[in-house]
Length: 102
Image (cartoon, one colour):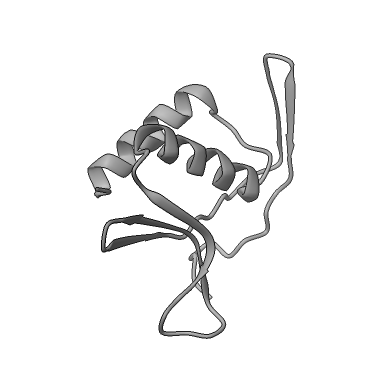
C-alpha cells in the first residue's frame, strides 16, 4: 500500500539509480518501473481519467486491491547540463508557473 512514507522510500531508491531525468515522461516511466519492482502486486495505469471529470487525467494511478493512489507528477527544471556515466542530460528552463497551479 502506498503512503507518504512509502512514496518517499520509492523516490529515494529511484534517486540512487536516476538522480536526473530527461523529461517528465522519462521521470514517469522510471517511477512506474520502480513501483513495479518494489510493489509487484500493484496495478499501474498511465494517464488515467479521473472519475469526476471527462477531461482531466492523472499521470499515474496505482491500485492495490480496491484502493487507488493517484500520482500527479511535475518535473521542474532549470537550464543545466549533467553527464552521468555515458549519458548526457541537457535540461532547459521549464518556464512553469512557480505556484504549481492552473
